[in-house]
Amino acid sequence: MAQFAFRLPESLAESVTNVIQEDGYASLSAFIRTAIQNELKRRDQTEELEKQQTVAASLESHGKELVMLRSVLQAQFALTDALARMILHCMPEPPAEVHAQALARARERHDKLLKMTALSMKGNARALLAELVNHEE
Image (tube, rainbow, N blue to C red):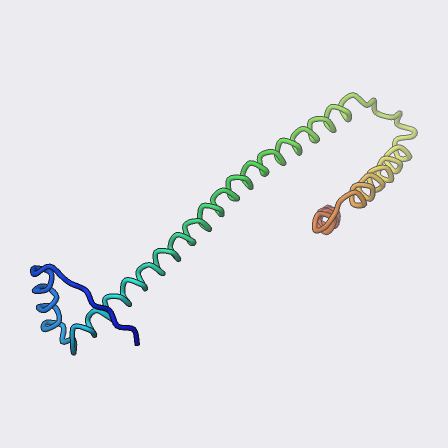
């Protein structure tokens, strides 16, 4: 075991002696070992707290980015919806005698559009689109 020698001011030495007697330490060495261990634990806890704060700050930053991405996604959906409404509004209705045929062709084009969209999507988005299509039915 390593040995150290050091000097303390008289007032500090008296305080240490009082604490040793009050807390029941076996010796000055036992008190100093405990004090050193407590300081090392405190430093470890401080480092751990700093790491946790860094992680928390990172999570907060990612949360802000997700909120921003959500807003962008909502804007894209709103734009797509407005564009679709404008196109549908400008399209003339087919004559009554071919309405059933036009409706059937429109459904085919819609199914083809959904399939093309699904093929261009990657990852979980494809499954989400399939769920949305099945939910409509």
